[in-house]
Amino acid sequence: MGTLQLPLSVLLCILSGLSIDSLNPETNRKAGRYNNQILFSGLGYLEKCRTIKDAGFLLKINTVVHMLNQNEVLSHFIGQAKPERWKIFKILPVLGQNSDDISGLEITDAEFQHFLDINKDLPQGIAIVPENNDAMTGSYLMIDPAGRLFDNTKGVYTYGEPILKAGINSALKGIYQDYGKFIERKGLYV
Image (cartoon, rainbow, N blue to C red; front, top):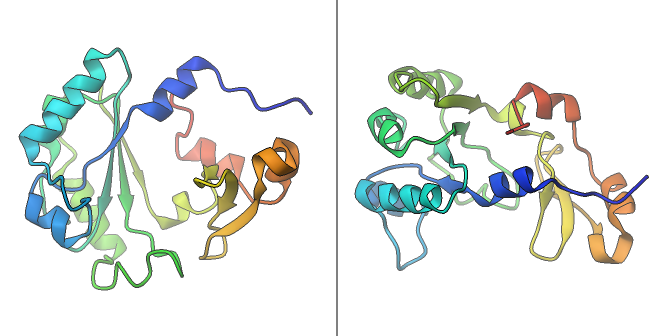
């Protein structure tokens, strides 16, 4: 096996994701989606989207749907932002990571579907990629700040050895990643 090499188009896609769960700063604050300094409104997010696109990057917007934003219509904003892809996730509890923080924010599959239904009208060319909890589990190759690959297939994060210590091939063997699920959830961006 050779070393993992990512084409520039994949790197650009990784670098151009923006998380926007709500256009309401108070909703974002209540959901813990701020850093004590920045609470964007719709106009602030739109400016960030334009900056990304003006720099020549493809734009992907990620939205996590939870109890506080499940009735929010974001489709008009998404139409203005014009991302190539809008990924919509159902909030995913991970034991020991966010399970205490998201208490009261979890939603049912029907509530997730409701959000998808009220946000389905978008201009042509914007791909909506919804991901329920099953689609997310095991289909991502995740790296933490310490350089360790990890997965979430057991409902908790399972960490491998740091890539720089173990090498990429050994690090990949220490985690589970379902390539079929990756393809099924449209993980290939370009």
